[in-house]
Length: 600
Image (tube, rainbow, N blue to C red; front, side, top):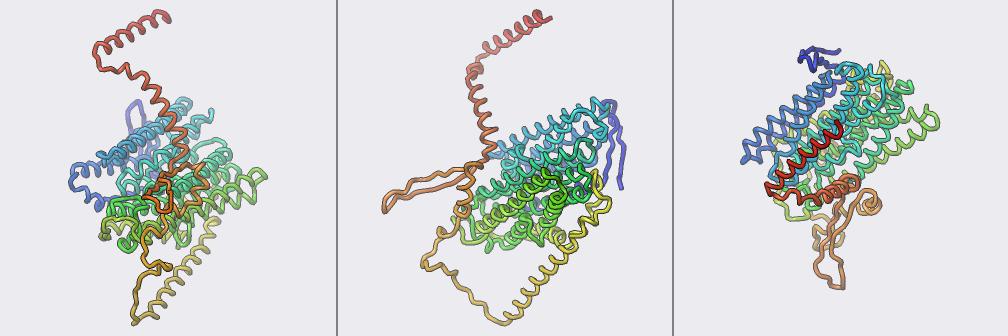
């Protein structure tokens, strides 16, 4: 059922329709859930900034503005009003990111986000205006009436892709997420980047372009985004930066579902279309849950230890046991392992791919095979990354003299518990959530009117997951009964024959992924810094590894540095002497007059 309302906004914008259809309500529910958990967690998190109370109050004002602007984006059906709400969201998000504005790296990350957000605004504006020029209206529904060149639709999709963080528009994510407070990072990854996904889905639901061709393009870009994101995530040593690259990976998985859905719609195969769009919508919800939870737990780690460098951490499961538990559950979910929710949405995407593989022609079969291989690789690499993250941060012993960590109170944990409960319920009862998403799935062309054919497989998955969880619970119960009344002996962990174990004999994040890093460093970018060890009794030496985004360095940083060096050659013009500035003004006026006389 759709809910609509008409606003009169003057002669320039005209009437603005507010419509809440099933697709809008699906995204609004996700926004409310994540923003609510972020608010509950953020209240406790921001108590550590007691000396900045005016900043904290203003921070919550921006939080509310961002929340309301995102809800408005889901219901506004006028492109000019949409752009106004989009700008409000961008500005409020910028203010949320730069909360710690006294730190230089935070301001730099905020400015990077601000610039790229306005690149998105520019692309959307040009695309919307081009469509309005032909159709004569700024109403969103006129996208369906547009029958001209495809470039305005491409610009609109590119504008939404910048916000969503698809490669190569991803470079703002790894900077903004580590700079923002933990609850803002969770909200950004959970829902702010999903507004880009909403825009793409809304455009696809209205456009009349060749959906099959669009599906191939979206699938290719998404597969590259998913692979590139997870491959770079493995090489990160900053915990929040690692999670930021996983946002790019999961946006790629969502995009792969969208691409499969478009191919199914374009080839008149309702099963493929329904499976693809269902997987995209479910993974949007799933990623919002487990990624916000991961950022919240990362915030606990940061405030307990005052560092996010995983190479300096270790053994936190003993000090922060509840945080470790929720990080582990969210890690299982993001890796797509049953019985958590990530498995359900990825399985839906797999179903669409395998059905496409069985019904496509030769070219389509090759595309389907590569898409399946890409998604398999993403899942395997995600497991590698999160075994590293959880193992290095929470297991073993501390690698440096970090401050004694103490677990936080229930106020910081119940938002995590709520997210974990919803994630587990999706994994155990997926058919319920598939049915809830049925209305949103029906918004797209070419989907089946009855989603039960696609949802039927979830019944077996649900039963198997419930049986597995029940078996594990039974084993723990039997173990507890068997050990009842017995004394538990504790002793030192066996050190493999070493009588004086130190923290240096355990894996580091670098050593854990060394083979992988050596294999892909030429593609992804990375390097080592250290002293050369010489002699039988060498002097003290140090070693440090780092990684960088090769796309960002080669295609953004290097051209910008070249432009900066070129402009520095004209720095003599800005010499601080007033008489020179007056001369510049006179020269400009004379040139304007002369050029006017010449070309008049």
